[in-house]
Length: 40
Image 1: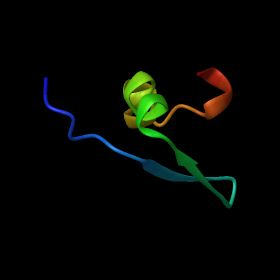
Image 2: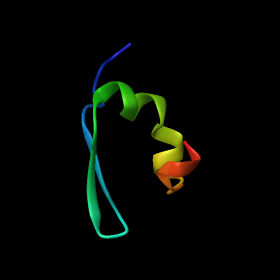
Image 3: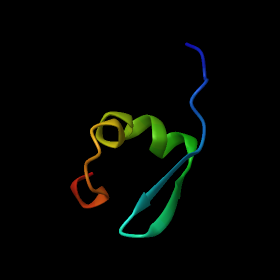
Image 4: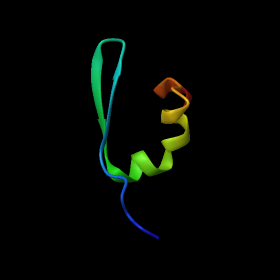
């Protein structure tokens, strides 16, 4: 399995968030679905 996904950034409610590789991989579908972090 290739490891191409790395750190991810997002902006929620005017605040910039940064997520590590593990969190990015675990919550990728929720991030792509634009779900609020409180849901995942």
